[in-house]
Image 1 (tube, helix red, strand yellow):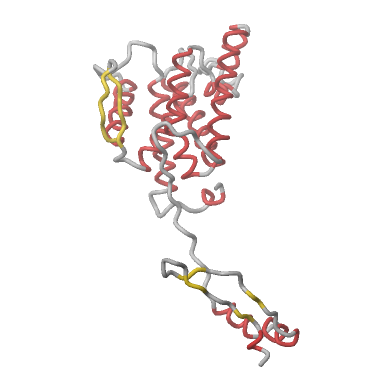
Image 2: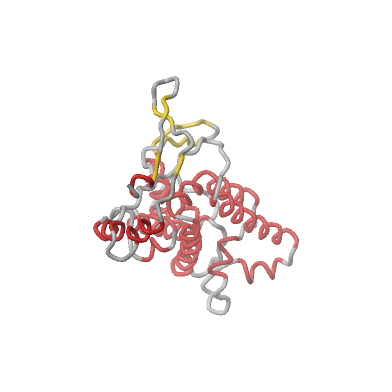
Length: 275
């Protein structure tokens, strides 16, 4: 009799014939029954011991339309990185060139005396077109990678790839200073392409739109940097001075992180705690 007074839930049918949940009427059991159910060794305690832990729900990378704005964590992360890169660009236009070269460009000659340039050079753009290209890349590829990795791990990818690309440039090109977020962008692009290798990407060649799968675009883009870094003849190579070794190092960081976090069932170890 006491158990019968525990709960009374009614269901009504909607006009479509499906069950709808109405307001529930609940009657609490007497105190003796509640105590008997929840005390050690009671029915609820015994059932909780036998119950298996629920497995985590699979995570999916939300799809975005071509021009949709980043939302959630991606809005803060992508917006903050854009603001930081933009602020350094303004500093190039307003501050002493000597100051900017000393603290926002990286080279083997003075990286030991200015180790912070391994990081600061990854936020530094002297040319507006250079800044625009990298920030457009971050805007379109970044949000999906943030959704897959989480905000903190994404920042680790950005900073880690930037430092790796700076170090690679110092090793491969000892006498030419470098700057720019291209190493970090290559890591983001590489990870984003691995997330969805068959996504359609439209590449503009002399204002001519050319659609191609993301995997093909990534292979061509990274392959161009690899050939240039090795000194091989390449008709696609830019005439402008480009830190190809830094680009390759950034892409390698993105591919390596994808192998850790996605290549074996979503990754494990410390990467799960970074989410």
